[in-house]
Length: 450
Image (cartoon, rainbow, N blue to C red; front, side, top):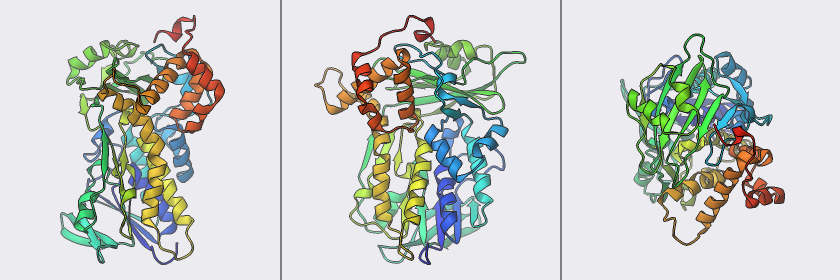
């Protein structure tokens, strides 16, 4: 990496921060990860990640990238009890026009709680010789050498305030980032922020199987939301410790359940097997709610000036409605981009933070569209003239409506969802013809019922 970046500071020890620290440890002499929370020594939720109480999904591409940076990760998670299963065979997808039958795809998926993944990644990263993790510290601002150069961070902890010098500062503090305000303090313009809010709320809890009780055939149950008619849904997965993790959600202002009695009552309003599945199970947690689901994109890449010695990635830059399961995978892909740009520089040349933000914006563009096109539909007048957004939403709905009745469309859509195929897969004439012709319902019973 040359002598220009010897010490990197990563703000935030979530998934994005740990992934960034992992790639930085390959090329920096030292990496300091700063985390506001006091971190648990085992797999447990933490205050700074309230979404950790809810179902998380790691897409197939994300799992592949993480495995590359953390060899043996899947086996380590499996040893901790996280099941591995084929997406096509193990998913029960309760879609508006039916449920596709089990379809082998050769697409291995692993399901676990967010705290377990964080714990395993944190243990791996802190075992690296060049990495130091300092928890219980709050970053209060940037240290600068003039308005155009960042040279570290100011922190505050139980022992008072301090400064930590760094050649590169990486913001991975997520939705709670203060970076726009810090840039303003440097005299830089406030970057434009785009938000798309489908007003989605979550309620989650975990369940244990009574002794002798047979688990359902599926490993994951998905009932997606869709404007304007399907404003309730769920996602349930089998995770470690033989636990069923269930998240119920509502969109367009529909309120998810608040208490124990409400939880089952809400589940009974859904199509599919979720209510019958959880009714005989033993709850192992209280009902937890979460509503910070707005899609938000900050256009750092459009700033004419960008400070040297600073980059931002993860939810600090672009955050998605968690319903689409893209967050952890995008964190992995953004860390891989950082790795590629660090290694692709000429020897001793400075790291171009502005170029990184520009490439990151391109990297997140398709995922942003995949999340925001359906989410924008919640605020649209359905009688309004056709627009590109409405046309895109119509096509995606038509694609999903064909899934239960066409195994090839199901497989292609799954590859798109898990990002193992790009948007160009939609341009395949055979796929287009199948989707445009529309659903042709099967005669077998499982295609139309959950």
